[in-house]
Image (cartoon, rainbow, N blue to C red; front, side, top):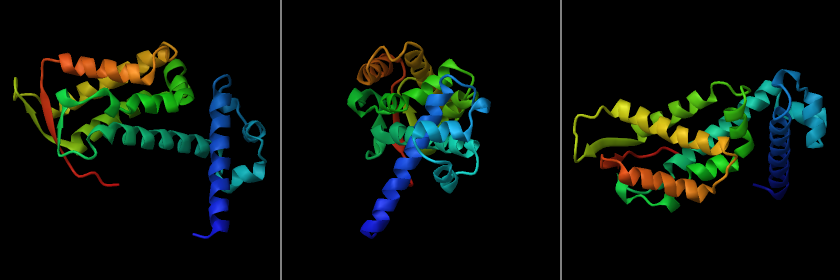
Length: 205
């Protein structure tokens, strides 16, 4: 890639980030329907032409924001097991848990999700994604106390449990650090009566 193309790409990335941050900022205090493209570009200190280079409608911008968050959620969830063959829950340490760092990174988005109806339905999207990852990435679940556990139900249970911690953290205004939340999750997992080992499946990039 030439230096010129690299500079152009960086400008595109910078412009898109500014537009996304502007939209999320506006959505904190204004109904999405009432937000105009002019509002977005003025706060981003850009012009309408820049907006239309990348998006046709403000809905396109919001959809890209959502997909960005989902993509980062997937990366953060996979972090603890992406390079291991056997993923033993009781051997997991808090430094490997990145999902709360993800929430902190997208704090304004998650605040909208939890405290308003602006992104109605996204909490369900989180659970769907977490459950899908558990079922697709992790297989051959072994428990040393009960071999009758339904994998589908177990995946649902864990996804809603993680979402619950995320919601409580956001509702409390991020009172604790992301590392504290990770430590708490580990403590909860370590005190769970079921000891679980997953065999990881190859992850396609």
